[in-house]
Length: 227
Ligand SMILES: C[S@@+](CC[C@H](N)C(=O)[O-])C[C@H]1O[C@@H](n2cnc3c(N)ncnc32)[C@H](O)[C@@H]1O
Image (cartoon, rainbow, N blue to C red):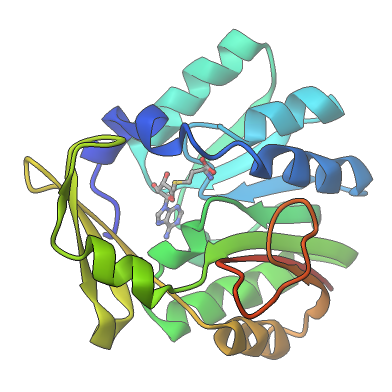
């Protein structure tokens, strides 16, 4: 697994800076015709505002019992309905085709290989209504950031050390107790290849959540695709 359960205990700290994505995914959900599904729903950070804004149930899939437990409590506190499913996004199978499937906060990067991602994209394409939308965001690898952070212990937002394994396009975040979370970054062409093999259509690639055009110096891929 690329996600140690220990990370659930400090997830609020890890995600505190990430707020711009919520209005972006909420807007897509408002436009969507059909069920709403979040892959790697975590503690419901995005799914709960989506459910609140749309008045609709959101289905969330995640492998982490600890994150799903947090999502259950937070959804009850917010008074919204989430259908929370313990499962791997690689095995996505829905009872009813979705109008929107989305995967925020770079969670697709927890999948180690091209084969894993291809499987998810094919499962997504098989799970969407015609015209349905698949959206996600992921960071673009920045060698300047890697050079600055590699091997350096950081106290914020939670004590951890980052190591870059460039040969495996992998970054490992390790906590003081040895718990590890790994992300495998992907290039623009890898994402475009996945869209292609899954039979999806690229609607937009932006460099940020406010619709910034994607440019050479963009550091975030924000993808919107359709079946
Ligand atoms: C960075 S969190 C994102 C949570 C939430 N989507 C958000 O935006 O705050 C990553 C989540 O991915 C989940 N995850 C990792 N690999 C997964 C997989 N193969 N299938 C489903 N969930 C997975 C982890 O359990 C964790 O909850």
